[in-house]
Image 1 (spheres, one colour):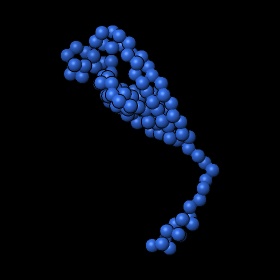
Image 2 (cartoon, one colour; image 1 turned 45 degrees about the vertical axis):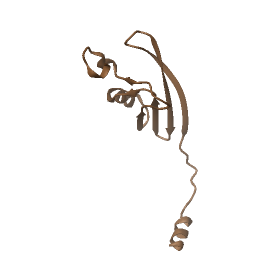
Image 3 (cartoon, helix red, strand yellow; image 1 turned 120 degrees about the vertical axis):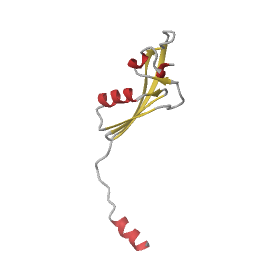
Image 4 (tube, one colour; image 1 turned 180 degrees about the vertical axis):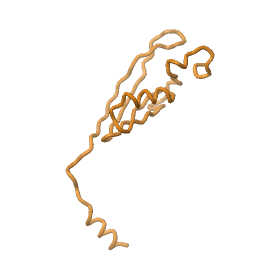
Length: 104
């Protein structure tokens, strides 16, 4: 087994190509549908090569995730909720139709 590990290690080589790694943070402001006050929503993103991980404090639904996918220039985009704490549930705009369970 040791000889096999050595043979495998001999085949390891370094390449000069590198993947981009980027980290950014920001926020956007939206209105609280209950009282009309402004609410800041923090957003953080980490990019590993062609994959982006976008983190939000509130729990977001699938409609918002689809909108993020459509707007993203990366091959792989993953939405993460409850990053750095939580900020309740944030449904998409169409979910505010009177009577839906998502906005209660």
